[in-house]
Length: 323
Image 1 (cartoon, rainbow, N blue to C red):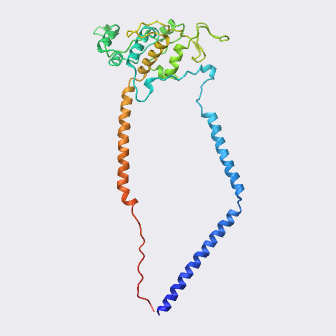
Image 2: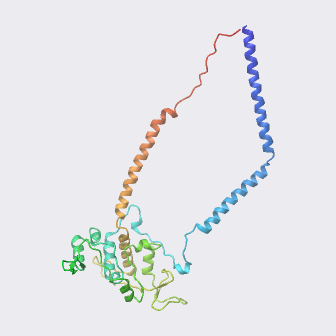
Image 3: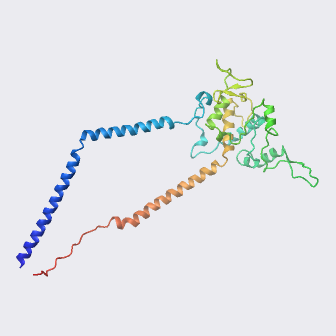
């Protein structure tokens, strides 16, 4: 009986092995017949062609849409300004507050005659450009309308810290009449409103040549500036060496005044820059700590799962054999 059962087990094992060998041979024959229809040379040519097509498509798309989009021709857009190493554009740097104070002085003595700064209140200057007493004294130099009284008359009052810097003209029509039809833009957001930002405004202020180049055609009352779109600008050169006498005795060269007023205008466009950078550092620090904790928790929670060893424990053969 024992010999019969052993012979039966041997036959079953041989039958399973022969079936597996037959299935393996069929699989190899099937895959071999499919691969034989495609030669390696054709496959290589197809791979090279598809890769070349993909690379060419990407290169052509970048040629059409990848570079900076220009709304006008290079001649109409003006000369592209050079990039200058502004300190406040670095991640861990702030504004030079002495430069902000000098830039505000340049604005008051030079730019304020034509350009407004309507989005900047006097209170914003406190602690950054001016002291509290200086800002109050500056605000009181101007008069503002009060609320109508019982008789409907509007009286004047001295300015307060909550008031905004007044414009040089009453309205746009008065501004155009005083500037030969040209409307001087407001400088509150001029750095953000112009392509190139600080680099463009600095290059514009320092880019007036002594004489227009040969062949340059300008309309009546226009001035040549290669950085201005169309190269013809209504504003003449306004910055000259020694035009302003700085309180800290810094040499008032043209480039120094342009640099200071540009930095001040950049602060006027984003006075929250210091707070934004400070908050950004806090967010990055907290995010880094949470990221490290999440990695530790993941390794701690999954350590038992990833280190688990699965062992197959087959059922034990029974000694009870049917006869």
